[in-house]
Length: 506
Ligand code: HEM
Image 1 (cartoon, protein in one colour):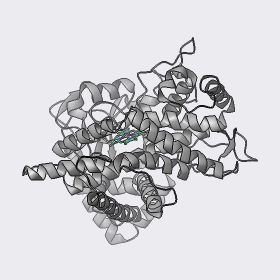
Image 2 (cartoon, rainbow, N blue to C red):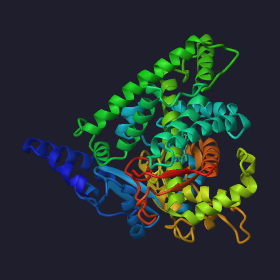
Image 3 (cartoon, rainbow, N blue to C red):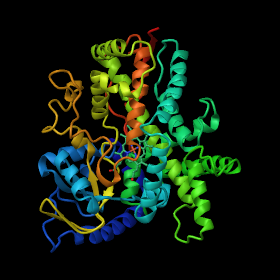
Image 4 (cartoon, protein in one colour):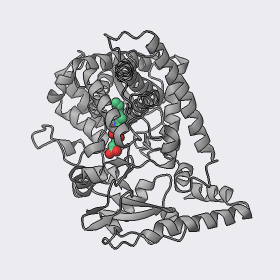
């Protein structure tokens, strides 16, 4: 809670600000909490909120998902927490989250657009939009991703090509310790870039490096304590530094993306789509030609759909791979078994997606990495699109809902040893791979991750290719026990900064 205290001091340092803050919070409190008792039915229980601050003092703002998991032990699988004046209903545990997102998809399928998300996207694109914009942009992204070979040979080729560049980059470190973040982010960015733009970038292209680092920085800051405070009190703390950095990043990224789109426009051939941008531009032209007034195929939606895919597709997959390599270095006996299986089934040939079924142990390890890595612990926020009575509780239309993914991936009634790295979660007694219902790292229902198929393919091909080529170890002088599994702070959570050695096996 220290960071919050520090921030509190700087926020409330002048008496006039304090009075202003108190008055505004009182108004917000009356508006939000005052309407919480409903005649329509019992509302989900929860810790008593303080006037004005709600449950703010109880929340670990750096890692709110941790507090929420603790609260679920006391209040059950559906409860209410006040993030300042903002009322949030938290759904916890596999059964509740799945039931809400799948059986009540209509009621729980909307995205909550927090003030910082409003700043970033202004309701455009796929990730942070609702209604017709979301419907059309999501449908377009899914069809185009499918056409560009998600789950097919074309995507496999693109990923394998990128694998070659990534391996080369790892080779360049010659077994010396290095931070895995940049190479992995560049590789996953390039895979989504070649689908979106139709071509990859060189790793030393300064514009590409900036696009990747700004996307990462924005995701990190979006999960910080100061941005949580901004989301609670947007009018009061709009000036905070983190928000200014995000706004600047968004502007610069928009400029770069516009520029990339302009280049594609100038060389566009209507008969040949090089990537998603081309398909979008062609569709845009068609809609303009037919004078469709309510078209969603606008410049803004193109820019934000592209940036959404780029940032959602880069950081998540790279963070999962970073966890994977760290876990391999920490548990060398598990790395041994993966490498033995790869040697037996594939030898030194290129790995192919169709070989996944012959690699049950490796497949189980990749699933267990995703489960334990738990990289979107809070999930993206949802909100109710209408009044709903769920599991006997009344939830009003427009309420923010967190379908807490961490509580699903660590659900004690679903997983035999939820808090340890145990690939047996995905293996039966005969050593065959088994699917598990509570494996929901991509969420479920209407807003389920658009890139699930692509991400699974990337994780499999990149992880296996890297393990074929390299042995991952802690840096000299660091023991396996000393490798730290504390997650970093952020909206998505990679491991804390660390270095590893990639020792060539060939
Ligand atoms: C390991 C990798 C990944 C994980 C764990 C992951 C996880 C998630 C989660 C939890 C959500 C929120 C779902 C919800 O609101 O209920 C989401 C949404 C989304 N993801 Fe992913 N994702 C990954 C990779 C990707 C990739 C590679 C892409 C790009 C092709 C992508 C694009 C998106 C988009 C566009 C959405 C918004 C969907 C919507 O709101 O309709 N993700 N992802």
